[in-house]
Image (cartoon, rainbow, N blue to C red; front, side):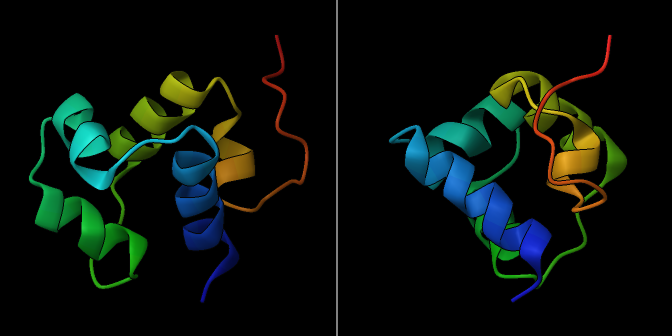
Length: 73
């Protein structure tokens, strides 16, 4: 599994969220979100942005460019 997929799943699980809850926030279906976590669907830049804002982590962290979760201001 690609690290960025694991990070996205781990953040969801660490926040005790179901895929359906996050899919509703992102305005996508639960199946679509599930396919993102499984690596069966490419994650769009817009979804990366929304997840970054939702979890208050940097998009670079989500995409495994860095291990630093903090958003640079």
